[in-house]
Length: 459
Image 1 (cartoon, rainbow, N blue to C red):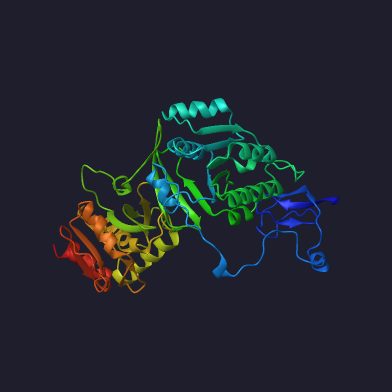
Image 2: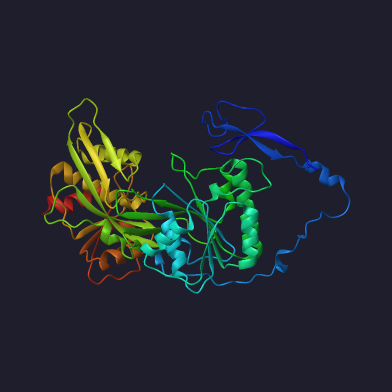
């Protein structure tokens, strides 16, 4: 029988140490080491001393000899959920979804489970009672005869129920509440999270049953527990948004079966989460009167083109140092674009406070929004209005030149679909342009100053 021993684990990143440390050498956090019981195993070198093959049933195979069965993906009625997963739920996949408390993780997964009326789903909950799940299901106004609820936190007991029920989809809420008899530490510890995730991963791969795990997050916004948890799973979804606002964003940060840049937008209602099929409509605010400092830019989130509204406010600084505040936009890139406008355009922004906001509550990092950001800043600085039927799609270089961006055809098509009359792009994008617009005029320019002169000073 293996002798039990103790070790110290960092509760932030999972780093182990033989003794207590005040500061974690891996993540730099203080006072995060906790002593946990671990089971001693044979040294890896001892395996090579034994003759014959190991006891594992797995044998080395040639790649050409590996058989592959292309199983169909399980699709639900939620198009946004299918998109972020890469087209649907992959059999045997392990998906981790994280988010702040109260953001709607449990509501989203219960809503997905209720929509799969032809699929046997087991909802394992360690945080809520059966009655609480029933109340939430009644609020969602959806019924299913194939959804089972299990209130259990012991993985060995859960696996016994899985063998008897044989579900086609498993939802675990949450991974931090589970514990395994193989580890003597308490639920939520690094050792327990790692062991429970490994057991679930083995079950998912061997049985071909997809499993969804709900994960807590730390105060910094990362998934709580060891970093190995994110390495084990196939897909990591981040549920973002302000609890006091109605819109939620489901973002893919890791996906072995699709793009890692996909984005799903939901509207939180009293009856649950409503998928927003055309997010450009909510990202563009409706205004009764035109205003300066507003420009429309295009960005790509995965395979989806979006149009967002950029709002800027440039005013004289009342203090010694000018403020630079960006909401939903990279502050360093904003400082770079301000420097380009000062050096190449002659705009005196060093003594001006600059406030930038991306409407809709999303965070963007597409360089194609550079031109729209610059035009928004100039519009607020000179107090001149940009026509609401004009949008922009170009990257701005340090020399003030307009650089080409990817997937320009899709950006132009999305702008035309939303009724824009004119779009400004880099002249270097014209060479690879295949889209033939009917109702929108494609304007091209070589520099940022060319766009500014055409829109205002030549009118």
